[in-house]
Image (cartoon, rainbow, N blue to C red; front, side):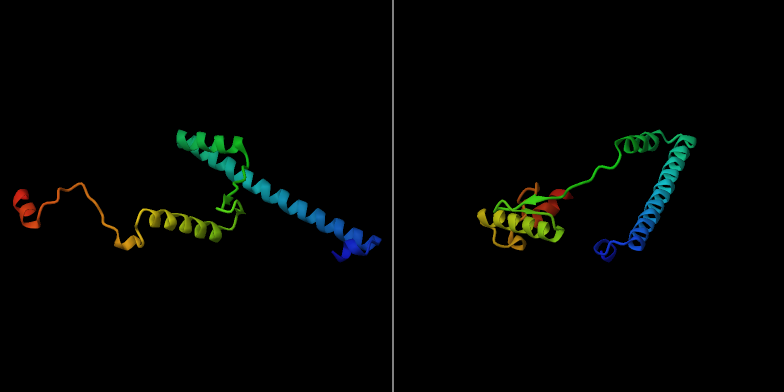
Length: 127
């Protein structure tokens, strides 16, 4: 920021050098990433792992696809923080359970497909 605030030739040269080094660094990182991807494709091809090969090719063709995780709250506010999203889902499901008469999840009855037969009769039926 100081280089941008005080524009003189040395600050401009320093800024350009830092930008050049950053570009070179990320270009090299991309090159190593692509080489690793190509080696993985080559290995999948050699061992005849067609599923892995075609999946890697599809991922490579699609390129980078950013994922946005944004949820709308009850008040029509958008939230992107993962902790806030989890808290929002917790509130939503707790309200759904309270509406249906369940105040605590641990107090709910669990229904099974087994017939409601006393334990002694179940033991006799299994024998």
